[in-house]
Length: 263
Ligand SMILES: [Zn+2]
Image 1 (cartoon, protein in one colour):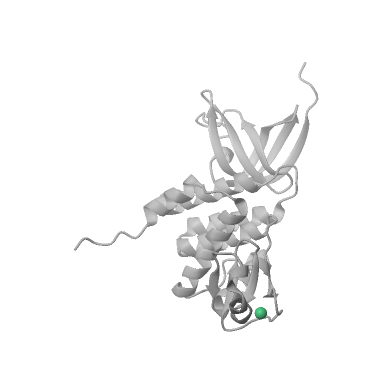
Image 2: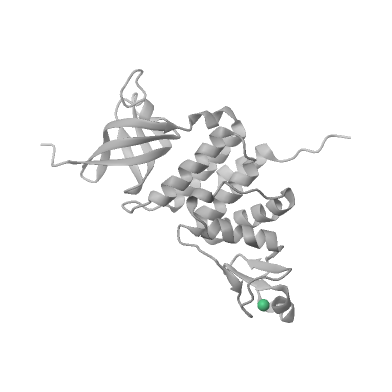
């Protein structure tokens, strides 16, 4: 008695892998059609197994899965693209591990996530390519991801006077809104304690990353000074909206922290 099972074909990228027994694995796969799902891969750890390649971390494949009693199992698959060489840099790898933890925590299953999958693959592609600064990839990932899984801030205009732009505006991470310095200074105590001062460039960057087409995400440049503010906003906004920290982020920061030379 095996029960009824049916087959489904979808695309996805492996973002988590746990060995079960000698040769099998549980995989976390971010898919286009079903969001994040846990999948059993038989023989994934066996040399020469047909499932070994498509079960590798940060590999994007087309999978055919069977579903039986609510559990998915790999039936067959064809690798499309591997981002595995991102692990040649320990900093890039630890950033990918942090992104994967955020994705696992936030992404629901049984829902279409084609856009999120495309964005996550673009991010892994950039990590593997190694051309862009990691802090830039981190800031873009955090802000784009959090704004597109249900935490879209209102960046259109000052929440009080509705002006589109002024020389100085503040980002309010708790409420996900912006306010111009004139309105803020009228009554600073009535707003949240921790806010970010933004130049027009930083505000433009937030709007670009939140509102532009996903294909444009890694195709802009920004000065280091603006990136520092954008990066601080992205990380703080993500952690504040999710209401938690991530050990994998702490680890990433510990290995990339600037260590001053001893005098
Ligand atoms: Zn205003």
